[in-house]
Length: 125
Image (cartoon, rainbow, N blue to C red; front, side, top):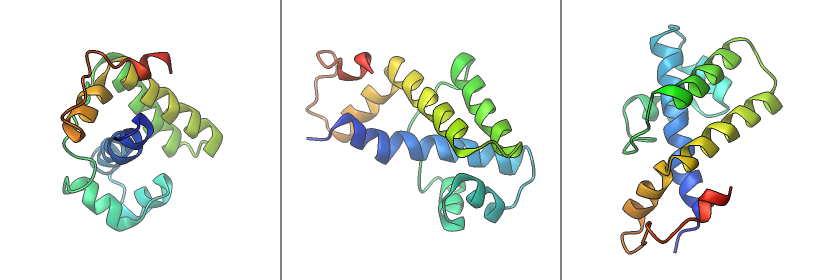
């Protein structure tokens, strides 16, 4: 049995980091090492995000509020925002994704016997 927080840590956070890393590299021409430093991960992790070895397999709605929050994170990183502000924005983004039930489908992929129609644990967070 996987807890929602395990699904968040194993799948949602890496998927977000992969999207952000890709935006920083492709749209802003930053090197992998710089992006790794900005995200607090290794250069190898960034390479894995780009090659879709890590943070892949999750479909994230890149429109509306989700896209705005991801763009906010990218701009905050570029502007050198402090870690508390970044933590809050990441938290808001994951919360929005939970609210849209994106994580439910991922959880079911990781745990096929989970009845996501009955599960509303993340709705309260």
